Image (cartoon, rainbow over the protein chains, first blue to last red):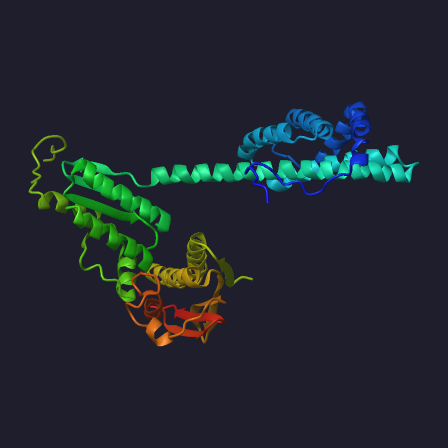
Amino acid sequence: METRSPDEVPVVQEAREEDLELLPELVTHLREGRTELREQWANRITNAHLLSAMTEEEIFSMATSVYDSYVEVLETGSVEALQAYARDLSERIIPRGVETYEVVGIVLLLRDVLARSLFEKYQKDFELLNRVLDAYEPAANRIANTVAVSFVRERERIIRQQQDAIRELSTPVLQVRERILILPIIGVLDEQRANQFTEQLLAGIRNNRAKVVVIDITGVPDVDSEVANHLVQAVDASRLMGASVILTGLSPEIAQTLVTIGVDLGKMNTVGDLQGGVEEAERLLGFKVTRSDAVGNHQR
Amino acid sequence: MAGEVRIPIQTDADVVTARKQGRELAARAGFSATELTIIATAISEIARNIVMFANRGEILVSLVGDDGRQGVTVVARDSGPGIPNLEQALQDGYSGYGGMGLGLPGSRRLMDEFEISSEVDKGTTVTMTKWRRDA
């Protein structure tokens, strides 16, 4: 099996040599009927209520580009230009909320419109029509495939990008005082995030030479035994690096659930809320916070 | 169907979905915040086992009621490898994957009713129910 570049869409049907001779005639027919066929297509798109997220001008402009790309593929046999265009188009329309079924839908409608025009033109000669279709169909199907796959791939790329962005956001390491770090965890802690969290925690301990870390899980909606396990391991690793951990933000519901399951967080230093956790951390390091009669104490 | 939700379980993300949808359904039956967390966690533990061991399965959460009491039943089904030694699996600390080994016994403690049946190479079914505690 030959190796395929990841961008390539495999060719599913092959046209015969003698049928390919008909392609130039086909291309000429499509070029001559451009205005009319493009309009037919645009009407079909509107009637099917597709691409409602786009304006009429946008649809017209897109229809022109896709139509011309279509003909170009038939003429050159190469889908490269079409792929590039489809990728570019997808990048623009996906944020607008255009769905996969719409993109597949419009390409198939164009295929139908062009096929019908071929039926009409060659209706007197059934054998010739068959040969023309033999040349047209593989190319048309390859085009539909190329556009659909480009669109889906672009969506996947965007999703991956968003996931990466979310991951970047998700575990900040905050230094609140010398040697004290706060790590607030927000959101669900799945396996991947848990590993990323532990990495960031340990890197933070090393880079800041932290002695105490306050891990706040107020923002974690559910803690089951697996999440608890991740936390225990993170705490153990932190201890190995010479930092002690204070866990804050454990809600009463989660506390009760963990106890019932049988998770032993006894080794962990837990404090109810973040403020208490920070105060405890300061105490551990010998800090003492006193309040002077400065701002705000004007009550009599 | 008003009182039931079915979630296919295959990935970590499905565990989160099962927990969320199970919790939402139970909330409709008026469970307290603690009870909701308990139900969500039990679902999570069992769903995770499916992902870990059976690759894929399904969880069905339904509202149940009889004689004026309200509850929620969770049925988790998979056609995975099955559990050869149920007694061992139901013990604290026994883990098939390096976890805490509290998933099954923990869920049993969390819920009011708990049944498990399993056959090697056929699969496993866990049925558990929590009744609303009316103060």
